[in-house]
Length: 82
Image 1 (spheres, rainbow, N blue to C red):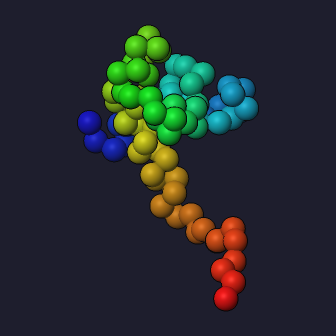
Image 2 (cartoon, rainbow, N blue to C red):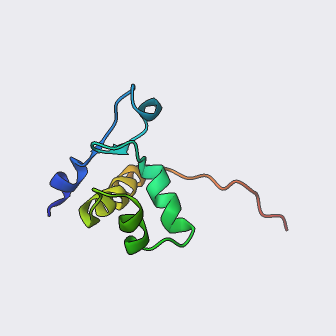
């Protein structure tokens, strides 16, 4: 599936989850799904827990996050001392 079709799976509505990006037709935020993976969940774990989700939904979350970071500039939170 091409990038634009994957990104269509992620929507934001101010009346759903305070406007955070979610997987279309769900209340599962991109942030929540990525957090599951950051804490060790596998694709199979997530798919088993959330009926109706598929691998393209997960890919869409990762692609959305990657695209969101493309134009982000980061400043160090701490300064190095000599």
